[in-house]
Length: 391
Image (cartoon, rainbow, N blue to C red):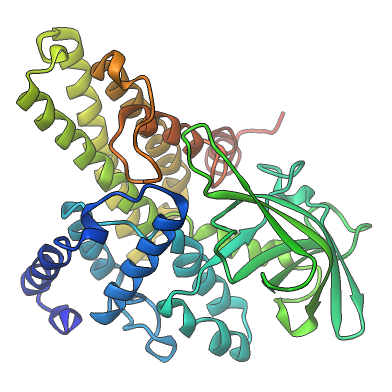
């Protein structure tokens, strides 16, 4: 097993590279998916292959199917996976990060035993937080849950729920006390997606993907035992969930930006691309690449602070999110301009790791909104870190 070598960093990296070199010969790893169904199939294959060698949920506690892998070990895996240009596990983002972070702190033992182990076997979760009128202002959720005996009856609508059309379960924020203050009266539930009254409608994005879905809830009955945390205290539970969106997840995504730029430069050299003869564009590329490298160092600082439980982690996090997402959009913009007229269309099909310039650019724009918009991040920096007055 690869994880048997985790105490020897060089041996651990060597074992990872050897396994990745072998697995990347498979068609599922090399050939980009052409549609949503194929992408889903590839993601299930990738999770199954990782699980065979203990890399499905290595960072989880052993009693729930993990290996108690340290954050340092997780960083090494992310570094080697991205170095090999291996697939991401984007469809399992909620399953691998949000679910364990939430249930480890707030879940009952019954909830942990029921919902955690199946993830490594391919169970996909989605997140039912945002609503048409409650995005960045998440505390404005209106989806209503009313107690009826041993169930809650839920009515409302959720939006921007990634991969909800493939999910078996959903983490759901609802309002259980409409008269409570804004951040009170909210409760957190685990919902089975095959429950009667749940309808998912895919949303097609400008980049051609339909990874997002709208979830419509009509008289959906959720058992009382599926509530996570106390009734009306779901906002505190949700903060635990949202805190898991960054860290290793963001680190791996940004590592891919580094290799995207390196691969683009190598391809440009091979084709003798026109932009290489433009001094201003050469300078712009190197400036962007330097900033990407600087952001990589900042992300490592955040991870070290997390390992050391330093209070600086909370201060660095919003900066990292804002800088990271802005840089990805700038990189996509440069690649599109440098590629010329032939880059003005999307040819990638359904592949969230595509290197197609226009796809990269359009996809990166959403990063400034997802996970808390950059405007919200600036407010957090001003109010909570710099202690500036509201107004």
